[in-house]
Length: 183
Image (cartoon, rainbow, N blue to C red; front, side):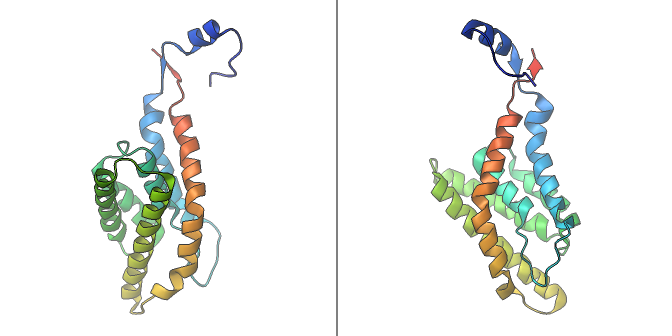
């Protein structure tokens, strides 16, 4: 870390000049945080119905909305594959749904060039609702019992926690862009 900036403006500028973000941190932090959020299903939360929000999916949405060009369009495939390994959902559901989400986010970016937080929250809420409905339907097909009504608490918690998740991603984005590498 660079530490606190003390001194005259010229000395502060001299400490910050010839520095750039560390490439491994700048490129890898979004991928790593989404993958770590996929492992949140290992937490010791025991419930009779799904109440834990899809943190990895919400993290993907937040990174994609915060920095649209950061994750490539094909990022839904490997990140969905990683999420499938840890989520317990039928294998391939994350790959398909996360890839479809990246395509929908690309369409949203093309349609609405300038968005505010309310539009992002509405888009994320819609995508989260569709994701939860489709994953519960797929899980219901796997056990021959449809489950779309039990996701209401999970959906409400996810929609309410999305701004907190976005704030966390904004903090991580500031860390990602710290000028740590000397040129």
